[in-house]
Image (cartoon, rainbow over all chains, first blue to last red; front, side, top):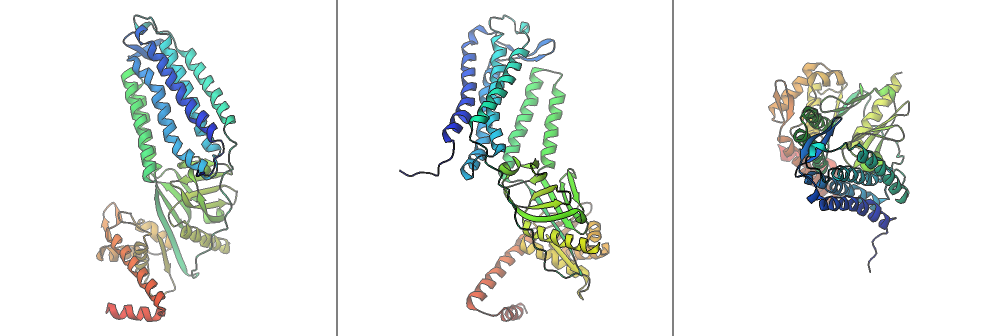
Length: 334
Length: 116
């Protein structure tokens, strides 16, 4: 029998990280399906402070929890599994796994609860308030997520280790240098963003169908998500005598670090989920900010006040050497 | 894209800048469709006259490596892709020369002769 390298807590991950959240949402959907004969043909699916104000097929409410739970579990399992294989899940990945249970419980309790109160009603307009199941769902979800968190194996430490500082370029003092590079996300992440966008737009459409007053807000959110995704997906990194600059495609966010403020620069090997909890403009422990577009080498600039900026970029080696040259020059000038 | 210019060199600055950008295209440091920094910005960075940068860009436009468009600045053309093929060919020459134990000076002399 061939043994694959053992991963700690394989069974626990399978049961509490995958089976339980999916099972809760599926069982909830099945229970709600048995109520179908007792439910009005159109049920209330949206509420405002005054009571039900949006109506639709009961199937909408029945299918939302299992579909979203399964989609979220599948979408997150890829990175979580890779991390568990490589070195064990860090806190960032454990949060993703625990979130599945939270999502599952809050969605299932919320939708099943709102269908339960509509059993036997002739007209869905009489549907009572559903704040009780929503609150119970939120609390229950948090409790289960916390339980899952403690059952899962202890978090692996962050993989970021200290590398030696970059070497300066071999150039004459009379030479001027300019280094720039564009960075963008990989195809796989583009796909993930497309899914997020589809969800945002889907939510906008659902809101439009179910209630009239929320539609412009939801559409605004979808457009905002689209703009932010573009702005956060393409970046320009530059190093010259004026400093180290990282800026998004739309000009914001923008981080400028004058060479005089830079203490150290090194090339680091970045693992997005483990070190920064994902891609994009990120914050991490150890006063690190990251512009994380992919796995692999990046430039880490440490400021004199201890804050660090990490950017994943092609040819990080050259970029770091340019920064090192420039900071040596700027300190020589003072 | 690493650009270097040396004020103390006898080669004109625009020539140095153009060959620096050409070198970046050959090694893949700048890719087709990528926009070169704005002339004013690059001039300020390298502490040269903006006309020096523009002259370098015009030189590269004349050889077809960049397109100059009003409002869009200098955009690298598909020719950069072919330049990087040249880089691969040069790598092959280097590997072959090393395998045969031919001195670098001899190789450059051979290349120079072949390019005449």
